Length: 342
Image (cartoon, rainbow, N blue to C red; front, side, top):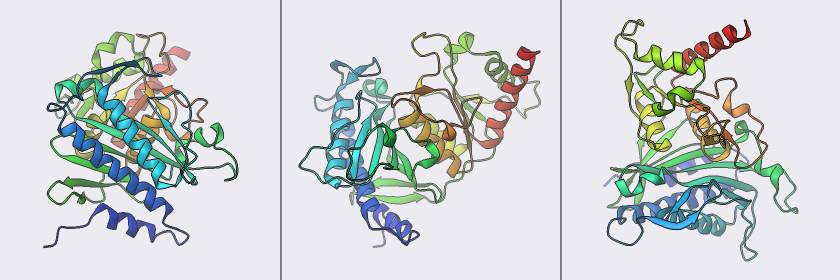
């Protein structure tokens, strides 16, 4: 029986687009695929075994660590180490670069990852996910990988993707040749191509944001949200608000249906004045995927993929989605800055 195109076959076909490919990158991506299956297995059993609830520790972001956070973090580290293709890893859960144990071969890639995005929703059985971003090292291979390798602009990503653990388990990724989605068929244990060549609609009817922060936003963002909801603003009808609180889930819905996701800077938390989302393991990979699908990603003042990072856990605003929606948001921001300057 023809079960369709597996993710392994798809990765191999993309590898053929690069005449200098050695198979190293394929091994690295397949390590992430296996990690996705491991995490999906544990997420699916979450209510049956002792993996729900808090682990009793605080991560580098000052957030409570969930038990599944630790399981996903360790699964990704172990499988990426075993691939022999990474020179260092950077996890949202850990403060510093993760050194590769000496028993493992070192490679020429480094991976930023959020092992379990939206983990505060775990106990409520809401969709959660894993986000990853892959770069080639820039330092000589005989040297230990360092911050110069880790702090590269998002436009230098060689691949990015996410896994969403929900009603089905999906893996969406791009290597710079479009965006493709794969659904895990549990009966055969394979990710099969289900969403080839994803293109985000040029304009949507959905906006996703945490409106409890409204009073703490800048004028341009408040005006834009008011415009989206205004039945007299010239829309066929006002935009619909859909916000899950899991970046992977909100982004994935808008990628397929069109719309805009906003997590702008706000003044609610003085410890996070520049935004909440992490540049390297959240904003950059999602921006890369969105642009590859025909969308746009901005902080409100600059293209996300052009930001030169200064720290591995740097936070930024993120506005990402359908190109016409993001452009309209930028117009509102420009007008607000013009009034302020005047």
